[in-house]
Picture (cartoon, rainbow, N blue to C red):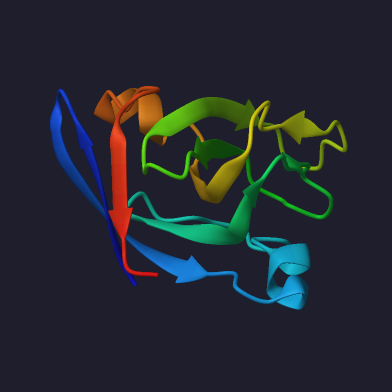
Amino acid sequence: MPLTIHSKTGVHKFTVEVAATPEQQERGLMFRTDVPPDRGMIFPYEPAQEVAFWMKNTLVPLDIIYIRPDGKIGRITKAEAMDLTPLPSGEPISAVLEIRSGRAAELGIKEGDTVRWSR
């Protein structure tokens, strides 16, 4: 599914898998050995809620992007491979985007930028 992030540095396009079911959300990007730079996974939440992510069985480091109900990025955090430390959203969010670690900084994506994707 196409996803775009609108930032001061431009429009950044990704192709994402959707983790819609509880089983898909539990598995996420576990056991993958690579995440291409223009790929990722989106985890939708309806209704918006506070969540925490960790990296059990996730072999590659990721950027975790928490998206508010208005589509704005509320928080970006780096997650280390295999780390079981919970990374909380800190506020109710409507989606979480996982992309390759360091990609958000590389592209100049920041908190407050807007994420658009089809739900």
